[in-house]
Length: 333
Ligand code: KG4
Ligand code: ZN
Image 1: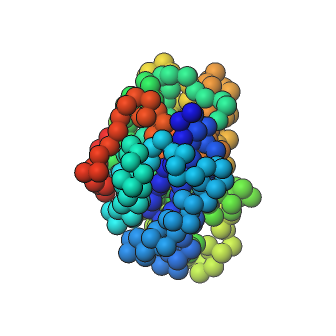
Image 2: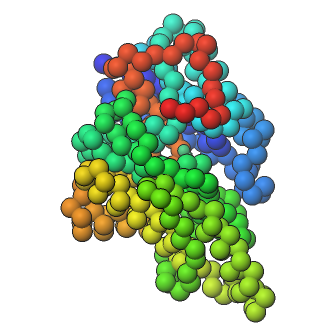
Image 3: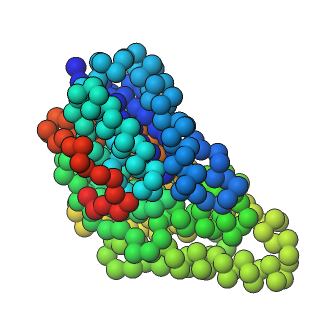
């Protein structure tokens, strides 16, 4: 039996999880409320909150798994990418545990882990599969040839899909992170009421900065006519913005599937919690004969379960880290 404790602290959630023989047996997340009033994550406050949270969160993950520190076979942590101060807290905690317990250490790339969240649970994609990874900092289409053999086929040239949600939400006066609120209001809005720019760069790359600018100008002009425009039309605006983002994502995902001939299709990352995107992938999957895989909500947004499952495959592949492996804000994979 192989049990791994994994820590994720790349942004503003302090997370710990335990994976036993490829099953996630506990997954604990402490959200940091402190950032909401600043309209975005404040790095210094995030690091401090991680320091307060990390011991109780790891303790709870072990307790829920019914294990003690001595039952563990390895300790894993998110090495990159993310906020450096936040990553350092998780890395230092994991390294200290590995050193004191004399257990192997495993470093994990956050974006690879988002993809491998699809290997959690009963229904798993077979290799090769495609994954549309959509988070607050990244938008990628990845071809997974094996658990440790991931290839980026396309990515965003500017903003990420999550940023397109969050920045549009900010223009609408909604608090950070705005993605889940746009999702909520969109459910009772008309997605075809307003149209926004839909930049579609070459191949299977993405671009979202033009959409954000188009929302900005649209709202500015509409508010000149009616100062209460946003308040009166919030649901339709949210539905239309969401519809535009989903159309861009789906066009590229369809293209990637045609180009590679792969019909095993996954989504991952915080934006994969979006109900409109989940429905669009399922509907397109039915039409195109795809096998569609979508992680449980708890494994879409940042979590340590995805770090733990990735660490499990790295353990099997003998890919261990050393105490000298430092976190990095931007490391490529
Ligand atoms: O993967 P994640 O938790 O953190 C990063 O690695 O960035 O993704 C966070 C992003 C944020 O932009 C947030 O607004 C977005 O995921 N998000 C959503 C939803 N839930 C989270 N966007 C749209 N609809 C949602 N339901
Ligand atoms: Zn993430």
